[in-house]
Image (cartoon, rainbow, N blue to C red; front, top):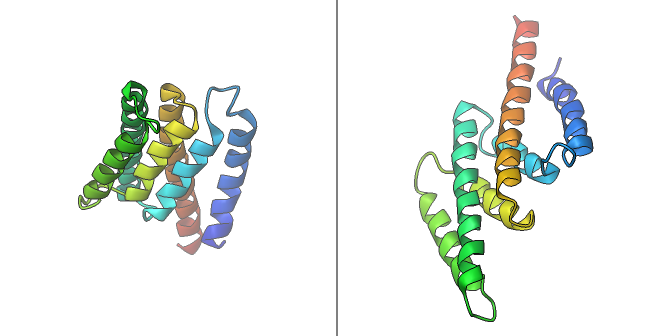
Length: 148
């Protein structure tokens, strides 16, 4: 079987379950999907998994910092300065091998887009990367067995 067909056979039912049950399970479905996609964008291997986890969680911390610092501001646009600072740091971190800028943006935007739900965003970010790694690994195993 072709790799992408097998990957689709593993990914589609899991994605449907996440879409259907994420809210009752305390997850944010679209956040799960963003880190799931980030894994593939980062290279779809063990290193990509580590990079996505690290980077998305750093982004989550950045989003948390933006919201908290913005809450203390008296500016008319209270998120302007903290957001600029966090984005600057995220881009600087891009020079590190184990950092993936898009996943950091995903983590930061997810926290703010989810209404500053820290735990739910954290779990959803991690789950997306785990599901991506599992579906990719299973598809590789099946394809390698067929080609052996």
